[in-house]
Length: 167
View 1 (cartoon, helix red, strand yellow):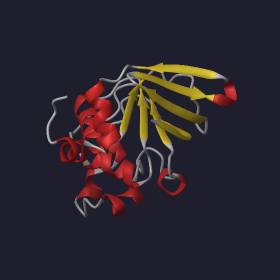
View 2 (cartoon, rainbow, N blue to C red):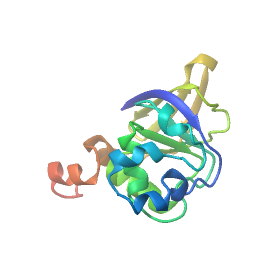
View 3 (tube, rainbow, N blue to C red):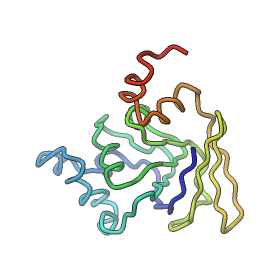
View 4 (cartoon, rainbow, N blue to C red):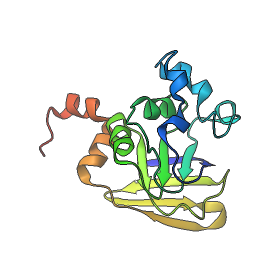
């Protein structure tokens, strides 16, 4: 699995309400309509500037706050296929994997806004490359089952294909 995209950098403790505001979810939970409000309270220009395959990069504790699945699905609806963070809130991480959004734990301190990134998964190994600066970061290893779920496009597709969690 390989993803190439532009880094969109945020800081620590990006909560799910920063990703998509609770007040917007009162109007609709249709993620395709909510994309125009993505990160509006943190970076009002983000939603109009996001491009398919952009990679969200954050410090630590990404996705803290409420455990709402729409925080993941609105990122995907905007074309984001991966989030890199020093750490994730457990509920966000589980929602990401269950929906097929790549969530990689790694040291993101050297990544700057606009960096062109290559995220590569080879078995359990995860590498994040910044080719223009010859930087190579190692992500936390990924469990085989997690990788299979991601390669299937999420938990529902995984279960449709495999019918169970066994080998």
